Length: 220
Image 1 (cartoon, rainbow, N blue to C red):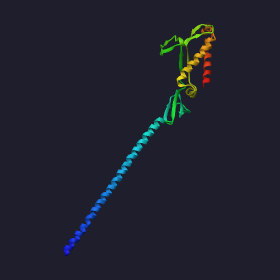
Image 2: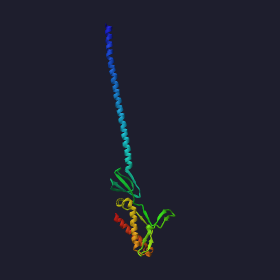
Image 3: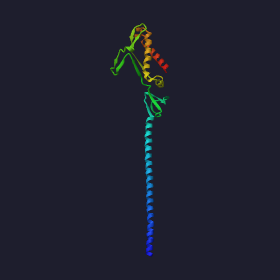
Image 4: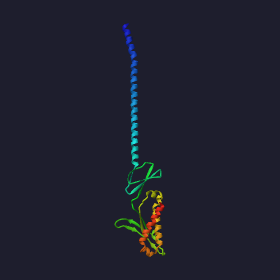
């Protein structure tokens, strides 16, 4: 009886312990699964954080790259913000707002040149020219003679803002040429051919410069 009871008791204990042991194993496995999921979540968060950091870093580099502009020593930079004039930049490294501001580089120290009645086809120690462009050089003098006048206009941009906004880009060079041609035509038409070729030559040059500068001031 005792053995049987003891056996039953032992069996009962073992029998009762086995389900408990199974529950313990399941609970432990469940805890391991939770920890694993948490670790996966942390790793996922870390990966997402790394991606965000890379994206922010790349965006910062791009913005920094486009935020810096270099203005050459020969230029001024005209900054427009949403298409409107904002400020003028001096030569050197300058900061702008990407996508919002745009910089136009205007040469203000470079001496530019326009030729009338001829063209320089090769500039060197032995420059070569194409002459007799009669559509530009042929003019009527004050004493009704036809004369071919060839001249050069050299100029610098002293107001980059006015150069950018007051005259259309496609018309800027044409404006320089039209003003110069009109000035020379009027001066040639007021003088006799011998005076043009002799005593009045220097006077024509000086007067043409004055007339052109005054006209350019009117244009802004």
